[in-house]
Each structure stands twice: as C-alpha cells, then as structure tokens.
Length: 506
Image 1 (cartoon, rainbow, N blue to C red):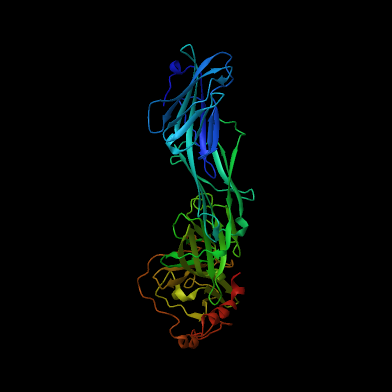
Image 2 (cartoon, helix red, strand yellow):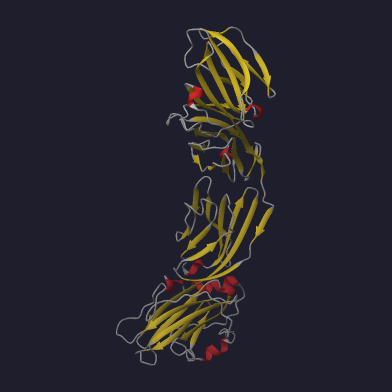
C-alpha cells in the first residue's frame, strides 16, 4: 500500500511480528521508505502500539485506524482527546472479533490474531490539521515443533516457522541447545524457516533458539525466541516405510575413481555401509546435512561428492578410489523424516602388476568381489586371435612374455574383466623392446602405454577360462605359479586365498 507523502505528513513505519513458540522475520517495504523499527510479540499475547514519539504539550486528537490484510481501505477503530500525553478517558471497541482499547497514553492495546493482521495508523491532529501519522504493520507467525515433544528416540524433529505475509528476512537461524548453529532453510516466497534434528537422542534434550534480525533494525540487534525439546527415552522409532532401489553392478580399476550413487532423494542424512565377502557389514560413512556433521570410519579414500552443494541440498553420492581389498557390497541409505530409501552397489576391483625374471615378464591381474564376475582373460591387442597361455588361481590370472622381447611379442596386452550383467573393464599394458623396465600405468592413458577402462555393453559370449582347471594344469606353468581348483567350499575360503596375494598389489 502506497502512502503519498503529501497526504501523510511526518510518519513512522514499524513491523510487528507475532510469534508462537519461536520466531521468523519478515520485512515488507512501505512506499520505498526505510523501516525504522520492528516489534515482536507471540501469537495471542497482548500487543501495545505507541502513537507518540514524545508526548504533545498541547491538546490533540488521536485517531487509530486499521487496514486488514484482506482489504485495501482504512477502517476507523478508536479516537481520544489527549492533553499533555494523557487521554481524557479510556474507550474500547470490538472489531474483527477482537477488542481494541486506547490506554491512558493513547497507545492501542489488543491481542494479536490472524483476524486483525494488517496495517495500523495513528493520526495526531490539532484543530483539524494533521500533525503526524505513524504506520505500523502487524504480521503473524505460526511456529510448530513436529512431532510434539516428548519425541521418540531416532525420530526426526522439525522446527518450523511460517510467516504471513511472507517477505524478506534480513537474517535468521536456529541454534541448538549446545549453542551450535543448525543448518536452516529459508523460503522467502513462502515466508518459512525450517530446521531439523535427525536421529534424535537424549543428548538433544534442551532449549532451542530461533535468532532473527529484520531489515531496518540495528544490525547488531538480534531477537531470540526459544522452544523446549524433550525426548521419550523409553521409545525408539522404527522406519517402516522403506524403498529399495535396483542393485547396481560396478567394476573399477584399482585407485581409479568410481562413483557410488545413493537414492536421489532430498534426504536429511545418509549412511553408507560396506560388506566384504565373509565379513559382517559395517558402517563406513555418515553425514547429517542439518547438523553439518560427517564421520568417515575406515576408508580415507572415500569422499562425499561436493558436500557444500549437492549434499547440502540432500542429493548424496560418494567418490571412491578403491584398492583391491575395497571390493564388495556398498549399501547407501538415505532418510527423510519417517521414510528410508536404500541403494546397493556391488563393486569388483581390478589390479594389475608385473614381475620380471631373467627369462620372462609375468603380467598378473588380481580382482575382488568375484561373485558378479563372469570371466577374466589376457589378450594380445595387436592380434586378438593369438591365444595367450594363462595361469589362474583364485582372484588372479597371469600371462607370461618371454624375454628378451621380440617384434612378435612387443605391444599392448589387455586384461579384460567381464561382469555377469554384460559390462566389462579393461587394463592395458605396454611391453616394449627398449632396455627400460616396463611398468603399469595406474590411470587412463592413450597408447603406446597406459590403461584403458571401459564399462560398455558386451554382448558376445566369452569362454570361461575357469571351467576346466585340469586343462590349465596340463600347461607349462611359469615358475612359482600356484594352481588350484576353483570350486571352494565357501566365499570365505576364496577370499582367504586371495589375501595370500595382497602383498603383490600394494
């Protein structure tokens, strides 16, 4: 509502915010003028609007008017004669279902509610001439704590404030009982302020404070409003609404980045579990976006991707640079209020190393999480039809190149690991005729040396090199090779055998 200065004379602008249990801030702008003051009271408490900056020294007429939020015109409320700052008698009136009263010093007194939300005007006149007009805005705020305390252990507590009319807050935040500033979401167009306490425990019992500042106030003036939070320690919340995503099958080169995705939900917090075959599942990472806290237990090479933006908005995913031993099942759980969402990813890791002797160069591929692997083999890139002799043990396959290297044996050798879902990953190794020691490149590169990694669809059936271990025994093994029948009695036996070779791939 615009008030031309020619009709208002000298006037003063103010806000009133009504709070119920906590608070939020709004700051409507009237006629482009700077707002000088903000008065905050709680819902259904007494409101006192002062008319005078300083009491007049002569007789004046004080008139209070109101313009509700649903109207665009002023309605008369009350008026009184005032001499030396004192009225000639108190009067009252019921308007909008509320009782308004003029006090002895000409202030307007009433109880705040939605029915009386709007603008208030106090006009001071002498001999039918306007001397001053004061404009006050009354805004309402509804505060909720959900669920109503005492809350159940492990549940998610919501601290919310809703302002009407919605406008721009200068600043606002929720603060925990320990003095820690909580992440707070402010929706300016909706006039809301929200914070949460996920996985609440008895440690969260206490007083929580909403700190606010409104445009026009002193920059150092902060208003605080508090709510009590209690916890029912005898009851524990259980997530019954759980959505499971489709399991993913992944493969990665050792120490190369692989993304572990989580359910794409704007969640409150995320838990990441890891299960190595034959061992119990363990929690390895947790992040609470409201408390801004994260914990990584066992894997320093595991990171939450861009926690300042994606995770801050509740979209979680992880970046892992796995060692061979990091293969296994990863389970990501995202929680939103009373709902849970899970996403499982099974990861196989491929590691390549070379070992030379006076007569041969042994190229070895090691791999983990073999439950999802269909096949693994060495091939000669320059002539894919050439059959390379390979020695296989659980978790490792080795091919040998006779020394010295010749024109027929130099070139690219590829170790390809095929997953049961049709995807594959490939590691390339360059064998050169130079007198330098050949090495394995640890990351993606282009020929003549390096690694090529691919996770594309592979439709052609590939012979399983492990189907006839007796055939492998008939081949001439490289020196020191160990052969075994790949029919272990259990997964744990397989990985115990694999652990024998961990020293090879540091």
